[in-house]
Amino acid sequence: MRDKVVVLTGAGGGIGRGIALALGKAGAKVVANDIGVTLTGEGGDATVVEKLAKDIRAAGGAAVANTDSVTTSSGANRIVQAALDHFGRIDAVINNAGNLRDRFFFNMSEQEWREVIDVHLHGSFFVARAAAPHFRAQCSGAYVHMTSTSGLIGNFGQANYSAAKLGVVALSKSIALDMQRYGVRSNCIAPFAWSRMTDSIPANTPEERARVEKLKRMEAGKIAPMAVFLASDAAHDVNAQIFGVRANEIFVFSQPRPKRSVHLSEGWTPETIAQVAIPAMKHDFYALERSPDVVNWDPI
Image (cartoon, rainbow, N blue to C red):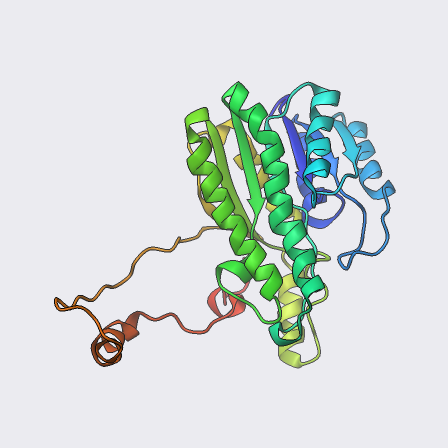
């Protein structure tokens, strides 16, 4: 990563701060972007990301703070332009900016839906798109996008977040397909970490409290090595993958593929689907599970 220029969104705290510090330590030049608001959108404190940039520089690295919003194309263009203005190029984008508006689907408002889609999905597209002409011109570049098992598997009360995070996976795959000819890679990380994105998880029952205590053992800084690796030249042959990082564990996730097929030579009717197709395929149905049901062992 020596002298590579990286745009990192959502850099102000938690996972983002850990990645920013690791990038600086690895020799990268960092555009640390964060608008400094709470997860619910209040405030707007630029001092957080400015202090982060100062910390990176104090440790011998190179960094500049940026407070433009990822939710508009113009804001994303300014973020990328900051890399060009300060460091003369851009080599990687790490889309980490996030927010939460958790609510059960039947109570979720249009605003709660749109605000989460805007940051996670639109934001990832806008920043990635702003960097694309530069990556294409130099025939190199790396994208790292944060997804979540809330989208890959599922969770209660997060229809907006889950939809956005699964959309990020499809976006990453499309970027990888469209830009592979230019030497550009795009991968996803599903992070498991205790941060302000998870500290609102309810802890009202003994079971919930036990789950939260396990989550607290998953340090946000543990995500950084994978993010730095995927942004680096060492990952030149890693493309279109979905990784998970949880404490000292690294996963590679499966991607949707046909599991079972059935055929009826005369074609199907609703009745024969009910009588033949569904019974034949039912053994391969997925259970209605959440992320904790699937990743159900203690962090290592």
